[in-house]
Length: 281
Ligand code: PEP
Ligand code: MN
Image (tube, rainbow, N blue to C red; front, side):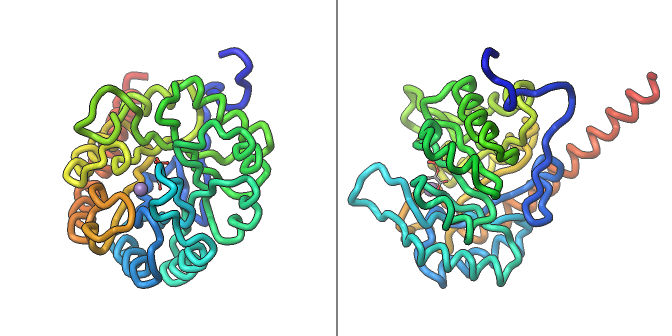
């Protein structure tokens, strides 16, 4: 593709991103936590549970890019301080969204990974700012964006000097209304062919339905995704945002058991395939 120099794959080499010892792009990673940081109790409880269930990173929004200005906008700095405490207690690295270029430098003091949400995938001022930051970036696909446009957004970040970009497919807009978005699972093999960067699936925002998180998570493992981002809440029915799609603790625990087994199965399959290829040679 014209004018893409850094985002596209050159040869077989894939980028592995180290987030405080978690090797994104090498080991399968699960990032889990609430849609929004609502209180210290809700966040700490969730952080402890997702850690115990086997997640590698904690998510939580302190700045919420809501469709309506009257919806809960997040706790801001207070939310970041709660995430910091949860990270300290659990040892989990924290992924949190930044929505304003002016906030990037100080959000870096609290976040281990800076998330750029779907609505900001083409906010070029924000992309340039996180491109200058010394923290990895999790770049979600714009809900109306083609893979080519996503690649150009990645290029904006890499071109500023930050090589650590994790991709996340979170569903795109189609004519379908049953699901919140349409999960484009084919983005996984496509972006693996086009780019050298790791790619995650977010089944929570892609479907908007708690009962669809398990089948789509397992499908993501089989599609070759490098990990998942899943919303979890102690009591989703009272969540201040995205209450239809967050998993409760019991649902998340059960899902993690299945994910671990399927990841192990795929590892074995790949090993066997590699050994067979070796024997042929
Ligand atoms: C989120 O992950 O908190 C979020 C707002 O997701 P998206 O940008 O994909 O809607
Ligand atoms: Mn959400």
